[in-house]
Image (tube, rainbow, N blue to C red):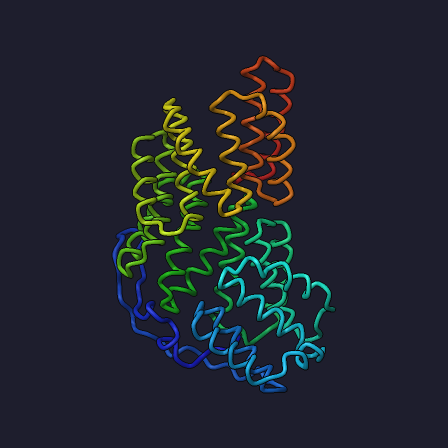
Length: 401
């Protein structure tokens, strides 16, 4: 949470500035600033100081340096003694948890989460800030967006009382809030926090996170039917990805450009972008976004054979990676393609409870509408009317949907 003196030394490959003009789509270079040094934070022990250093490194997404500090911590200090000290046990566990989340080591999520839950809250506001912020990220990663919202709201409240939060730390908080608000369909708030995060990341010359903020803004503008603005943000992200040779950023931008074309009913162009996005994806988990896009576009074109092939491929990948959300998506589409009556109980008993419990309003609305259409096509007009009305009420509650 302390501002480190040299921004350049800590940014690894993001060591040059890239600020994108949305109107021109060009790159401009600006001078680096020295940042600000906050001297307000004091440490009682070397362990506490080291833990805050590790936390700073997780904020900067510096996996290598964070790992080195953790190895040093484990080698030089008695961890059992640290955990027995009520002043440092919670700080140690939440910093370790944030490090585990940074490395996406999902097998370790639940054990350390349960350890943290068993501890009382800290009287130290900086520890509580890290505590709630880390839980907010964890809940987001595990598709519990309602709990993520609550934890991040607590972090935002505590952040207002602290004077020594670095710009990197604050930017990460705003970025995570924007991501969570995107999932809960709170479009205006997601835009607000994404813009705040983008401004900070551009000033910090963090090109990768700047591009990710552009993606969040683009998705929000696409959902709120401002496709021109959405496209400008996606192109900015794509340009950054190409410039810093980050295939992940390129793939995200291309996928979302495909989403714009899908919304505009330009299916051939949408399919082109989804396929181009897939070419740049190296991880199976991230491929599922574009595979789902292909399933839906081929279904819209009534090319059911292609739609089914992609749905089956997506389902295999989702099962292999144990990703419940995408298992639900692809299973539902296979039932839809087969006109299988299992789709009705599957949506009611499996899909809607899952997305409602997660607080994922967008997919709750989407599958409620799918069920309404199913009833309408099967001439069950009363049920169709009830579910269409449920859709309408959900959309009204999220006026920016």
